[in-house]
Length: 224
Image 1: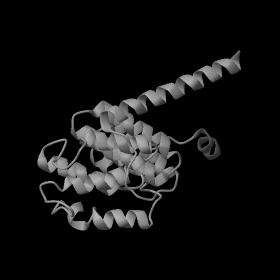
Image 2: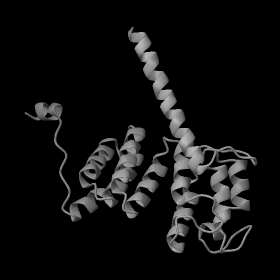
Image 3: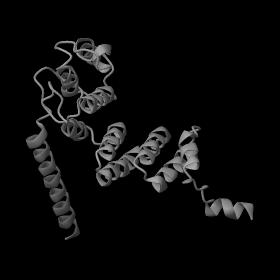
């Protein structure tokens, strides 16, 4: 009976995941491409990335100065091409975010999707990308959607596991969305795992939000 229940729950979880994927595709398009990919930006550092960046995500495009295959007005098209090939391309997502802010629109000319969709696609492609989740959370916080931002940051912490650098960077994002208690936790956890950086702790102390870590029971017993 228990095995049957577990199978039922697993099946329900799969159906729920497929439903979310279908909803994402309906709203933000399929991840399938006709030009190659999609590839994981964190892993693919070879010819595919070089080819896409050389022909579409050049330095002028990244700096929002001019398009590579189109005009400056429609330079989002080059960023969009990059994001179709590499949905979680961190620098391209940042460029699209800055462009949307500069143009004061969620869908800059040349982009077939809104900024929310580009982030949705990136997370549909690689839900464990903590950098994308933190970036999206910052955008959500700046857009007045703090609750959703916190949801993504909590998920990012779970995916970060024991990665001290990731936890520290997520803590910086938590600070920016004014989740100070969780930012303190992230600062303590990152330090515990060996991250030597103190910038997050300094920010928290300056704002009056810092709390010293509570000694563990084992440490308390050893010192008594």
